[in-house]
Image (cartoon, rainbow, N blue to C red; front, top):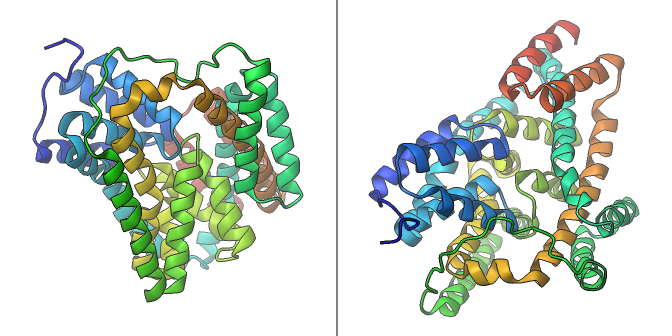
Length: 397
């Protein structure tokens, strides 16, 4: 056996138990990558360092929450499809349960004075977190001079009311077309290479068609049962497919859909949902559970959670065996780079919109600035920032 191959395959129960623990204790978006690597590579010895890094590179190429995809990849490499589903489900479950409880409390007590005071301070922290996301994403638009131009065009188009779906597709096409002419060198999107070629599963086209048909039937069934649930599942499936750049990428798209277009949540409610997503363990985009709970209770929470995480999970299951071909396709990398650049433009717009709604006085600005410095410059753990802001909010507001 090659030393880069899987070292030891755990049982499904051992895999599930490990990712339940990780999902219960890991905070901070991409900061969760290191705890997963430490557990899987160093402590358990289930994957080699190279295998793990190969999986991380693949996850960064695809839309969806990166850490959920990484859990799916580890599960697939160890126990194929059942392992992928077990690892991803176990990783998401603790955050889902906690978010349902917090959503119920918010629904019941969200109008109390002390809750409103906390909300004002926490909303300022959300703006700081979005600024942190922009800081992390700055490398995206520094790869080529085309990228900041696409980000600015996206900002202008969305400001003018254009459909984000059309804008993202146009950005991908534009970056692909112009990149072939003006960016002859590879962009480095798939920087971590793997020397291992996984065998392609048989009947993959049949499986893909079967899954697509099952999803279509599921959405149709929900629509017949409850039109709002059906629309919720359709929107979250679409977000799961389009959100390149991890969980942060889903925030502006969800805000665009749920607040601006459908009006199912107010801007303040959406901000509170984001904050709850940040302070709960597990993937940041567990905010989808809050949105679903707010709209249709526990059924909405379940539908929203499954719909937003299912597309990236299935992508990992289907594409892992084709990883070598995937990362060698330069045309696809160029298109993804365009979508990521468009995401930066959209994130700027959403930060401006949410900031205008949240930063209404000097104390709010001061809390936001202090949180931004703590998170970006000082790299203080988010939990400590939240605790500090909670105390200040109760005193000030």
